[in-house]
Length: 350
Image (cartoon, rainbow, N blue to C red; front, side, top):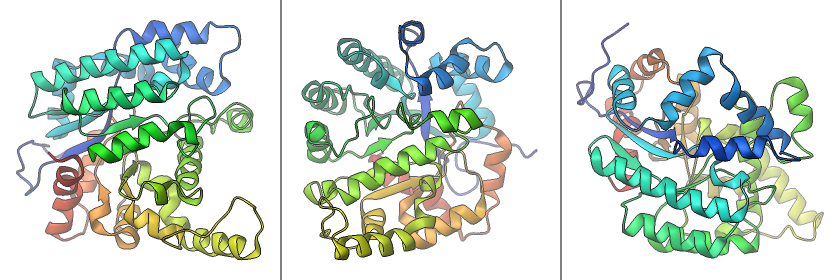
């Protein structure tokens, strides 16, 4: 294996843009949910494993999620990662009751803010919020951005079956747009009633279900007209765009056909006309978990090379070999530098 150095020896810095953490207190909060009377089945599948399995992988992930010092920095050095853009891990606040969700959002932002102050050249933070209380969430986003220096907002997708296109969440979108910070929509397991067939097949998490869930969330923001009401809002999604770039042609065709036929009363023409125009203008994708040159090149081709960024997905998927694969991509030097470094610097205002 090559020596993966930090410091831009390849002609670019490596900025990893979907890296996870959680306050140590989250362990007890998640355990309380798991032991409750009727826990969400997707949460049980996800965190029943990561919290309570003693296999090597979940133990590694637990240790790394709560470490914001020596372990994380060594892992970054070993993988050649110059800077990590870090967010509260899924489902974060969004599985909790409102009061506990609000408290966790404040705690997470305070702890992440402190880590970023301690390591300003290595860590950048995304602001957590509690969508269960949209007004508090908007105020907490403003606090985290203006006082703690956060550069984006993390929303771990649906909040107990509710999505950001619903009217009650407008304060969150208003805050992000007004502060000119992007919202990173990280996957959650599908809501109750949708996730069970995937659990039965072992497909509910990162293997497949995560992508389905964020793709639904993203498309709801588009076809509902939400991004027409918040035209400056920028949304980041990971895992090579959760397959949406591959689907753009058919999304455009079928959405247009449905609108023209009046198939759904709530389905109206969009200001930008095509679904793909929103994906090209309001979305940025990261390659988190997809160290695959053909997929990176395809997304750069159909979305624009300024719309695709590097991410590692630490600590869930972080083999150093994936960094080597992406370093070796057959793309020109300027595009590679945009992918690893300068797109992230622009999007997060680094």
